[in-house]
Image (tube, rainbow, N blue to C red; front, side):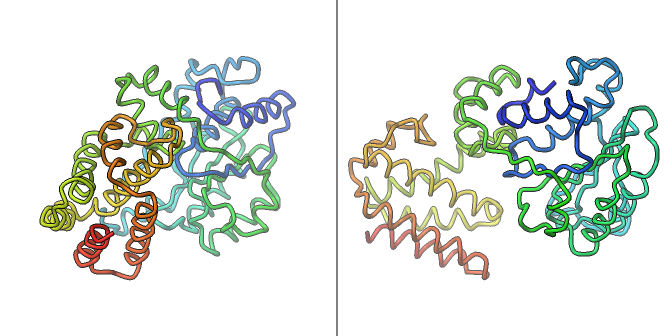
Length: 353
């Protein structure tokens, strides 16, 4: 049922109309930022077709077919995962859910393999095993290089009548124009923060304060809210608060250098950019208070007392300059900038005003 999904009600209306009229296209492009729920919408649409007891053309979510539809066994891969031939072979095929008519192509790190697309082409030409149609989701479709994209194009040009292909992407403009032209595009918007907050409380049993903070940090992306480690975030935020305190309250440069050292030690190196992001949001919140912006716009609303204390000693002009300096550091990371030297320089520039 689409009602269980949050946000993007306009997409729900479109999909319901397509289902009721029995005019679901053979190729759909789900476009929007990562984490807004595109893949969940695609799976829910597929479930509507395989459901044994549909309600108003939507999946019932309780029949055996619905319960099997979104159960996938896909290997978990992180940045540190060693990619060997055995792992590559697994990603060179379609991953089918526990329901034999719903499959997914998933990239291995940054690559959608051409063999996976060729396997999809073969499977798409088979008749459905149980349902009225077969469904294939290509996750992160923008990670297709020319070879898999051209292989997919052959299928999109002459799609089998009983197969549907759903492309999921946060960067639709990077897809071949010929692929985009053969798909009906559904554009997803960020989810309202209050909707995310309510979902976390009501469905995921978050404490209200944790739900409010996770929703604020999510940027309108439910996936981000669910993946945020709040305990880790609060530890990192406390470190970044020391930066502002050392500049705006205590004028303690030694503490600034100590925090810079901590940011760059071995145990925190993977969190460096995340801490920069946190520092940036804190400065932005202080700047918002200085300019009398609506408190609802603050990300770190749970520590507003600290932010107001900083704002009493801050100048909006300097805060804007700090934000620009952080962006300069962030840009330098792409060209292997020495992080320790860059962090020391950033904090000293901030302290010098």
